[in-house]
Image 1: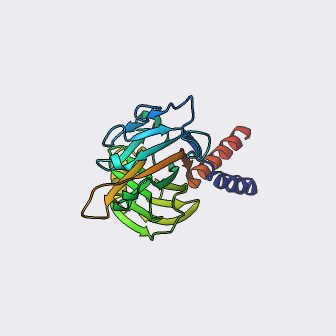
Image 2: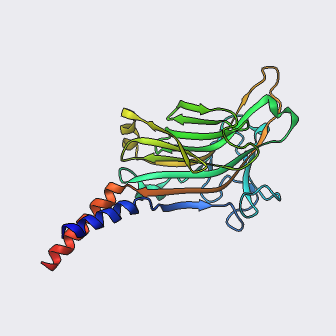
Length: 263
């Protein structure tokens, strides 16, 4: 009986790597139509202007399929983000029993000679249900990668870290069991940040709130505000990964219950 329980627990731990898909999309038709992303399939806008994020189908710009989301940062008047899943649809994956993982492929293209006057970045943001940031990861037009832990910088990987003018996958995980955030570039983990005592605030606020497609643009030349970049997004996914400990206990409880029924 001990060997059976041990084997079941090992299998349950291994199953912890299996993610339960909450939502994924490549922004293809007919699910998405070209034009403003706002209002399509749960995407809400926190950007200025509200039509900053657009669904496009220009040949050669999609990572997969024929459609993608893009932002022309020359038109951006503030940091921009579009939300997904900020409602009761995520109630079944709130803490402490899950790791929330969000990922997207993003590329920052230089779309004008004047773009050198601006620094643009694209990536993904996670927020709790009260609207406080859990963490963010972004790829800049110069190939650097910036990371936020809550609202504070958690570091910048230098220019040239990733290939410019090409899609790179950014991903972020919020581990509600351990109170940490993990950051990934092209499948490789590059950072882990602890939220410390702040984590209790996120749990009290109701846990995970939304995953954002995110852009930011800043001046690199004090004499001009001209220029911008095209930021592309494709193959967005949001998943809940059961924590190994929870699955182990669930498997053990099931075995004990089965044993009692046979007794």
